[in-house]
Length: 560
Image 1 (cartoon, rainbow, N blue to C red):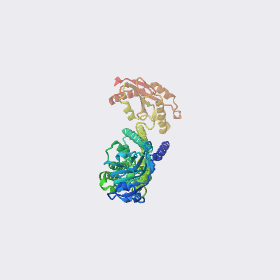
Image 2 (image 1 turned 90 degrees about the vertical axis):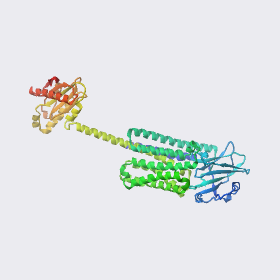
Image 3 (image 1 turned 135 degrees about the vertical axis):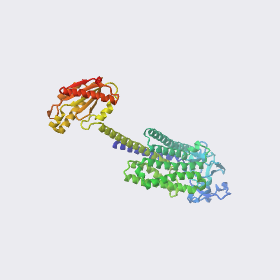
Image 4 (image 1 turned 90 degrees about the horizontal axis):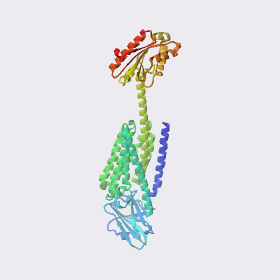
């Protein structure tokens, strides 16, 4: 048990070390140099050709979210870099809720190039990581600055965030890095789902299905939030993809809670904590669905409600872990490790959503990294739970075998009792040889040695019988000092040999003990045949006793 726990912890440390290295590696997915931007509200009738030459009109100090929703102009710092055919430049910005995005590019020769999105928004520009990338046309002249016109900005986190200037090579490298990250997670998720479904086919534990549902929803969320959904479905509007993100994220949170509830012992979710968990679980997926359906009309209110639901979901973890600790749950530490990263990232995202910390690419994408850790550690928890269930099953089987053995065994001699002997004897195929053995003058033995001494004689005799018969022979104590041996006629037990060995055995206090044996051959296909065979063998035993004891008498089945 201890060795299994140590292996489990080592596996956990390895997984955490691997996943903790993911953000540092994947940080390469944030390509290029950051661009400072300034904001100007669009009051209508404004000329972009004039605005791009008037950067002083823009506000560079106010936090973007303070401007509220609406239409805006966003201008970049001076760039003063050329976009050559052999070294083209791109500008990358975060995917945000907006109706359309137009980019004006000012060159040093005074020319302006414009790029406008269609009804799909930035969907055609999306790269992996949900980054919109505008290619900057190659010119001989240097690029002076950029001007964006953002229409229909919800401005929940900002108007235009994460602007970076990158080369084509940096962008390609970023896409490859993010592709490796997402592909690695997708492979992990699929492997976990297949593995647990295969185990479910054998074990049929409900929590395995809930775990698979959680990982499948997380995989779907990753597919959507990574921008891969826009690649697979180019006609989807980016705002629809963002709504899908919230729908899937809410469902994933609920599935994680349902999995935890089915995984933990029932007593952990007893009382008010179970009712609170149920309410929060339904609320999280319900708000996600509400966001998907109503986001275009009440996006600010819905976004706040979604943030609050995830805060409530995270808050449920602490009393759950506290109760699990108090009740000494077997799975406390595994879930503490598994939930540590999601709680931290949920807190960071909530702080960013409430504008208490600044937006960041990896804060916005932290849910995927956290849930990767959660999925891996939860898989270890599933493996550990199955290990405990297997141990419980093995203990139960062992106890059942022991109880059956005790129920089938004579407690004094360790041989089969009469009931177990009959259960195994009746129905045996082929002709059988039955020996009925009775110790001679056993009442005199008890009077001489006492009942304890008599019991010891019975134990010694039983041990001799066990070691004198071939494998597959049934040996039982069917009465006080009466024993039975049943063996196939093609592997018989010689009764004379049994008596000879008994005469040579050393008994307690060197008392001399003899026995009489009656035998009979026949089939045992039914209880009627057993009664007939036993009656004939018992009659032969009576003949042996009458003839002077310490001898064998054989009887034929036809005598019945």
